[in-house]
Amino acid sequence: MSVLEDSTGVVNRRARAARTRRNLLVAAAEVFDRDGFSGANLHAVCERAAVTKGALYCHFRSKEALAVALVEHQALESYALRDELLRRGLGPAQTLIDLSFAFVRKLDEDLMTRIGNRLLREATIFDRAGAGQIIGWTTIVRDLLKSADRAGELRSGLNLRQVAEGMVGEFLGIQLLSQALTGQRDLHARLRRAWRAQLPSLVRQKALRGLRIAPAR
Image (cartoon, rainbow, N blue to C red; front, side, top):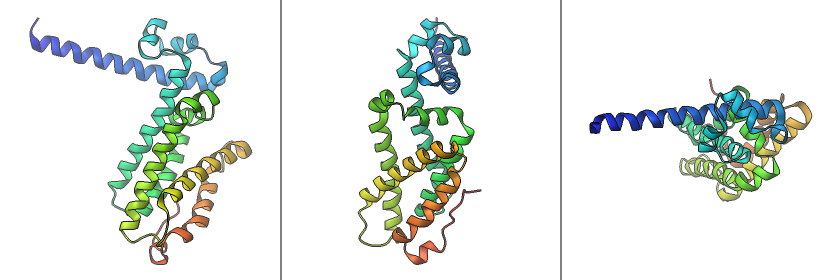
């Protein structure tokens, strides 16, 4: 066997493994959505993904490991959304607002993101993945706030770490309230109200006039 053939074989095996892993995550999201985390079982996941238990265990050692991977998926989506919005060059404050609405839209449109977000509220999963998720979200928000501050968009004297933690906490709270009261049907409206209430104390008046508190088109 030539070096080229051996290299091609490795690439093909990695591609197959990546597809299997992706299929398992999609199947797990569908099963968790249907049965809930506590009611779901690995047999149902394997059946939906059309793989054996052995194939599943090559990628995930337990139902909890599948759930943590789905939680981590939504973190990757957050970074991807941020990068996509930054490329539009609309300014850091507007990007931060747009990111929150883009993530809410992702919850509506992408089952894996929605289930990963829901799984984070499971006590077992939160103990394993909650700190990393919240630190990641806080870092994204704080970095955008720092950029907004350097751009002269923010009021002076703000503790940006505390502001970022407060924003993340408020966003999580809004989701819980919306889920409890309307099944998250009013999440967009609650998010708009939260931004309207918070922005005047954070953003300079001149910058505030140019901000759009609505999803980006």
